[in-house]
Image (cartoon, rainbow, N blue to C red; front, side, top):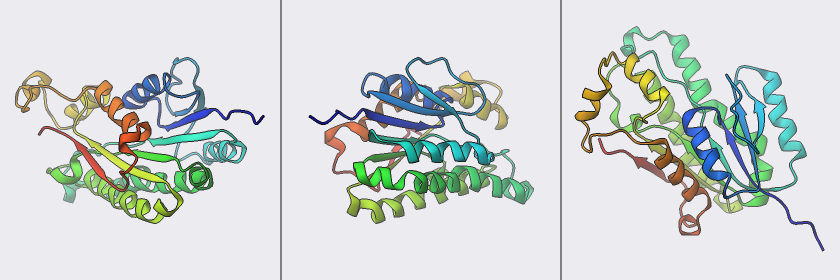
Length: 239
């Protein structure tokens, strides 16, 4: 009798608010969770944590080793990595910032997919990429960020069309601002002094919750009623 393979979820960028939210919910649905962190290793139990910094080649090598030695069943790969812009006008944003945002918010996903490509194809895994609703808003003082996320969006849609012949599903989820420490930081970058007043002006008078987005991510990735969906940009925003 063959050994049952562990159903595994990989979360790259698991130490942020949304990453941790996804991991907590995935822990009830998967046998094994592999996740990466950058700043501080979270204390979530039963997670195989690996340090990962896009600018650190040694940490890329560690991910490469994970891919080489992977022998379980990969259910889904979830990409949660991204950095915000400085919230300056396009004419005031240094070229180096554009390059860094594109490198982290888009190119890192391509590089990651190349590492796990064979595993994803073999298992007919689903891939979920976290982006932002900024790609349709294109608000002033956010041009470099919006551009990097738009590039990511175009990459995911194209890749999904190319990989569908292997039974791979790839989708991108674009939420609006989350009620999280990162969300608070972004509001400060925008110069918004009162979070309470900002929320009052939203249609439902509240921000998205991490738990809500986490549930949507795992549903798209794992639930059978999403099995027909690939190459879609799913926007979760009420503003």
